[in-house]
Amino acid sequence: MNSRLNRPLPKSHKKVLLYISMEGPKTKYEIEKGTRINHASIFEAIKNLNKLGAIKGKKIGTTRTGLPKTNFGLTFLGLGKALQITDVKNYNGIIQKWKHLEPILFGRWSYFKEKVGRKETERFFLQSVRWSFPSSRSEEMMEDFRSEAIVAHFAMFREEIFDSDPEIFPESGYEQSDKKLRRLKHVQVFEKWLEAFKNDPQLMEYVRGIIGDESRQATVMKKWVDFLKQKLPNQTDIKKEKKYNEIENGVNP
View 1 (cartoon, rainbow, N blue to C red):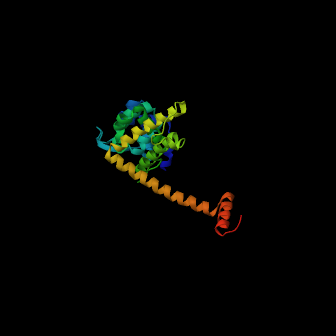
View 2: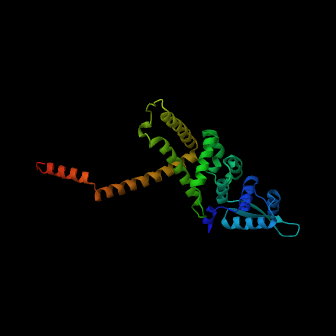
View 3: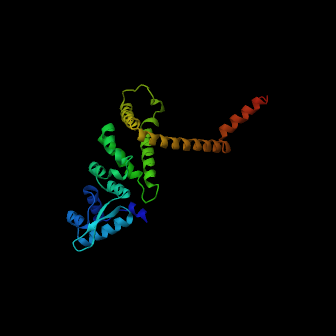
């Protein structure tokens, strides 16, 4: 059911979600007054966003007529959806208001800005909510998001730096060309991220755990590839092995 959160939201639903994300928890009356959307549309948007798991109500008292008075705030899923549909210039205000929903990454928004700069921090979170954010509720959704976001971030730098020139690490010289200078810039930015991870013990421990998982997966994949290469050798390998066996057995090739 919650996979529907990946689908485009109606305009009124977007407006309600973004209003809550920027202003904080609000009642239906406050949302109606702040967005100037008619009562029926507000009721429908609140009902559907709540059903999708994007917002959650919390009773804060009763109205003058004795009805429950409820504040509606974002959930973790709702935060991701709000960031997906808003402009990146709004990230600072939204994340500062809702960072308590996910303390390891979102909770370090200000820390990342200080260590790597606002532009790089925005790029990380923009990429993370677009490509790594879950589309449905599950017990592991927050953990999966963190892991996938960091793995994708490292993969981006690997592609920008390492894949194009494996010899660039650790201290090879840089030619004064546009390509080399661009790569040098990526290296410098990546070093800032590594320092940010290293200087925060909790974050460092978390990232090291992810690296360990990736290492184990890489080991398993290598064994699998070696097995397939053994079972499905190419003709060159077969000829080399045949020639080697002939030499070993004293047969003149």
